[in-house]
Image (cartoon, rainbow, N blue to C red; front, side, top):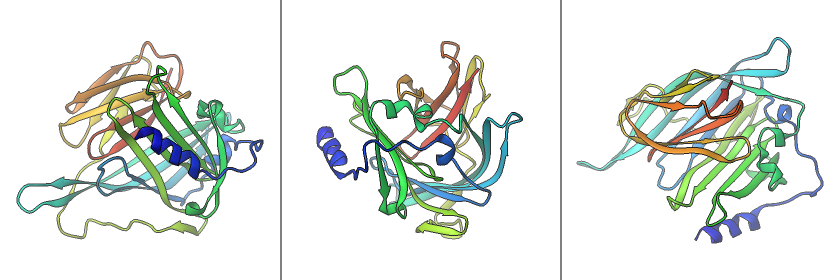
Length: 281
């Protein structure tokens, strides 16, 4: 089943000239205040959700080698309630966070080293013919590996993120950019779901991680409810450094064995996936 999916994935990719250069990190993560992006998770059996992001701040580091963006999230996820009359229960959350990007003039391969294993360049009809750089490759011990696909759009950031977990025999996450607004130009249909309809409840932001950057221990704090989650730490090459389950409001990760640099932290439950980046000092 997995091999059939990968064959369809590869067959469906529209390639351009193989020798074409990848975009730079600065070209991919080139946002302005007021830009909006909406991302939907469509992992296996994942009910309706949307991470609706607006850029509300932008600044450079003192030596201008790192670009920071302040983002506001007005988002929601849902879960199926089976008791009584089965229905979807909506949970809304808001938060403000800051993300940063370095080596802006460097090739995208320095941000995602999956491009060293495989790469393709195309234009996406779903994203108004935007230029896309993508990589799609296996990771693991060599037998029934996990699979990763990442795509990045010019001025759009990461537009698609897919991770297939062989042990779970399912997609851990499949996140897709389905709407954006840049400079007054819109592409796609925005999700306008609000709290003004029935059967909806409010929650706080789902997770927070701290400190970031981290020297020794990284804390994951769950601000919603106590249930079982799984987290995966990956380096920039796509290598899985740590994969564990946890339950409760707080989990502490020892990072002393990690080398200095940037890492991705994926937190996943049955209802949604949360993605964070952290820097190890």
